[in-house]
Amino acid sequence: MIYLDNAATTRPKPPGVTQAVLEAMEGFGNCGRGTHADALSAARTVYAVRAKIASLLGGPAPDRVCFTINATQALNTALYGLLGPADHAIATDWDHNSVLRPLYRLRAAGTEVDFVPADRQGRLDYEAFERLLRPNTKVVVCTHGSNLTGNVLDVERVGAFCRDHGLLFVLDASQTAGPFPIDMERQHIDVVCFTGHKSLLGPQGTGGLCVGTGVEIRPLLVGGTGVHSYSETQPMDYPTRLEAGTLNSHGLAGLSAALDYGAEVGWDTIRRHEAGLSRRFYEAVRDIPGVTVYGDWSAPERAPIVSLNIDGMDSGEVSDELSQRFGIATRPGAHCAPRLHRALGTTERGAVRFSWCWASTEEETDEAARAVAVLAREAR
Amino acid sequence: MREKTEKCVVTFPTTSASMAMEAACREENVPGRLIPVPRAISAGCGMCWAAPKECRSTLEELVIRRKLMIDGIYAILL
Image (cartoon, rainbow over all chains, first blue to last red; front, side):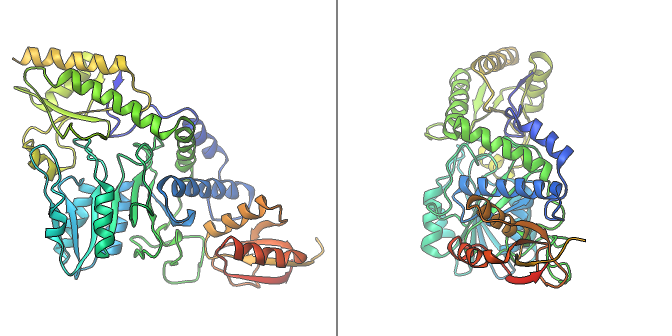
């Protein structure tokens, strides 16, 4: 199998990740629920991951890193915890349903929401941020790297806009955390939401949000915390404030190993490797008759994603042919990004998404390009 | 039964804060260990840092210098 579905979840995981999860499952007690050796092993590992994430994202401190089961829960936590019926939020056409659906539900309860539009190439209209600004605008939420086109947000520009207008900036870094530099302080980001199993190369079931200084998020979930047991309300100190119930310390042990791998190899090296392969693939397929590639390829930095269609074929058919005949794993259809599909004109067909990771090779990339050429020729 | 001696006990609002204290003490060779919070103390976190009583001023200085989050510092027989 040539695995090019890394935007859905990276595979394989780096060396050490599986072993770390296994050892955690065999050795960990419950983090924060006692002081025996096994409970403290879990607590120390979880704390170490907080420190690594805070350092990676330029967050204020380890205790501002709150863990969830994925980016969706992190984004729900941030959006429900910051917005109310009197508030206005600005999002973008790039956003994933993990942002859109919470916003639509909030909108039904009174929150006002506007979207920065994308054009036919998926380029955002950055001038629209100013136009959409209202007196009650409180939050700007943006996807850092589009999971459909791979285009990357101008974080500095949006961060400066938020700083100038006193707005809270929530960044969805599901496709970018790790390989793409993020510095919450320098880029004026108030909350970074991340998942562990995509660009961070860790296990599924891990994720979280890094919360900036002075940002007060109401808890989405309340429950057992191991602290303040007799209080009727959720403790308000971070990270406990946003962490009800047992943490996935097994998964976080794996994420810790993945973060160590990224630091050892160098996240910049990983980003350049992935970007080189996706660009190589793009160059090989863009001129094949009948192939349409989506997104803005003039952008210097892109997430390692190429989405395309072949004339005369449904995207699901292409993906299935790639899987069954060529042993290549991709994702077809709609990619939980309905507004961007509308902008690109792919609402009906969806698109076939190819996505790379640290372990992908040139040979695999070339094989995938040859397979696309074969299918396009057969479809003519 | 182990003989009780006076200890300096530091309590925390969160497990994360107790981990930060343990890491700081390990780095600076300050003695002590994490134990369950004694019933005599009301604290948020279920674990506390217990150290010899003569470490109190060292711990207080450490807490201030490293901006560690704590609930309180107690002298207690353990």
